[in-house]
Amino acid sequence: LARVGTFIADGKGNITGGMEDVNADGTPSNAIAITNGTYTVSADGRGAMTLNLGTSTLDFGITLTSNSDGLLIDETSNSNQASTGSGNLILQQSTPFALSEIAGTYVFDFSGSDASQPNPNPESFIGQFVVDSNTQTIPTGFFDDNVGGELNSGAMTPGTIAQDPLQTSSFSAFGRGIATIAGQNFVFYIVNSGRVRFLSTNNGMLSGDAVSQAGIPGGLTGGFVFVVGGSSANGGLTRVGRFTVSNMTLGQMLMDVNDASNEAQFNNLSNGSITSYDSTTGRAQVSFRDSGGQVYSFVFYLSSANSGVIQDISPSGTVGFARVTADGSIELQSGSPFTSANVSGTYAMNWSGLVVAGGSFPIEDEEDLLAQANVTNLTLSGAADLFQFTSATLTPRLDLGVGGAIQINGDGASDDGHRNGMTVNLTGANPINFVVYVVNPQLAFFANRDNSGTPRVVVGILKLQQ
Image 1 (tube, rainbow, N blue to C red):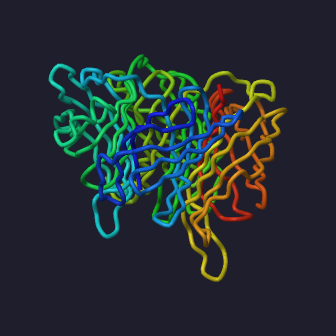
Image 2 (image 1 turned 30 degrees about the vertical axis):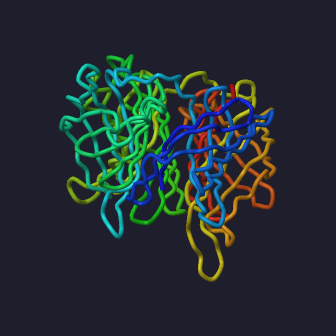
Image 3 (image 1 turned 90 degrees about the horizontal axis):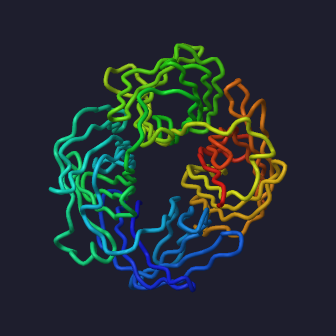
């Protein structure tokens, strides 16, 4: 299930309107009116939101990271439906909207599944395209597509952006339109000229953002942190790690992998290389080997000198196929050394992935957590909402206590081979241990690092509240 949309908040706890589009396993439901709703925000930035769509109701937990953005999870559990998932919300520009605002070069990351039925393949679709604001066309672009491990890459067929002829008022009111990208159809919502949100309306279930591209460097240098989530033939998959680029040479590589609850740390990575860097598209490929000779490869597109999207293309034994399907983010590290002095303050925390419920017949399903945690001397304290789709009642657990600690080793950047850790203690649960890769004092990526308690495959983010 994927959803994208917009809502109007009046600043007094009321939702006065909006619209959303939904894709449920390849079946789209378009231009659904949000009639009204309510929301609350506490002093710590945590809150709740209810959206009414005719006779249907959606419930969300939210944690604001500033006055203009935040993280959220779906906490809907009623007689009509139960749903969960993680995402974010960003303040939309004021009306009026114009198609000419979508102009220039964008980097995109769309993920989800393809149109195969009854068993869709996981899909990661990333790349770059150019929008001509005069003609509302996408004349050029380049993409990398991973569908169930099958890799395709190349120039895009021309595309278009337009108002929806079936819902013309949705553009002026909500910035909603339709697009054709690389032969696939999408609905979009303009956040602002620098970001547009997309949801596929045919050929499966893909969703994600396109972000305007600017300031791409002529060459790469510095430490980069990356995180990807997806699936392998075994089940859920996460990879999180870092590497340093110097004179277009790759070094100081470190990575942690969780493949279907089997966690592995890779300390002795070698044969690092970075190839095919194109400062026009921001595209490059990186690869390295573990001590057993296994090759790990990734392709990424930078949207700026500091940030981009990344896709796993680690080769299998068959030419043109990858071992896994996964994608995520790549970020330039800054601000090290990381210590208790600068990793401090109140952070929004979110993780998402899979959890296994035990018993005679164990089941695996979605888990999403959203929290606010105060970090003081690397000690955590706060509150969280947790929704595990393995629960018998399919209901979220709200306002759980959060404790634990962050462990920083070495300079905290992990360029010296030392990992950072985090232990999270939730009310009524065993401690959950994570590996943490710090991007800067305001941002870190993490993934669970052991399964001594409840097996899970989750990846998450710590983001400082501003």
